[in-house]
Image (cartoon, rainbow, N blue to C red; front, side, top):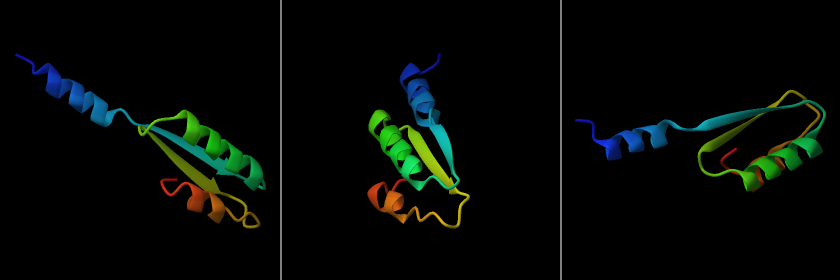
Length: 68
């Protein structure tokens, strides 16, 4: 017999969504996008920002959203 409470826990534990944002000369847009995603999502979302622009400084995003 399947323990449904355990099965639900396993599914809940494994249900995580990853969002990868690519920044290229758009720090302001990337900042607004991260803010929007952070406000609209729950703890099951992982946001990853890839900075492909050496001119853009994205430290402010990391300071405001440490989990990114």
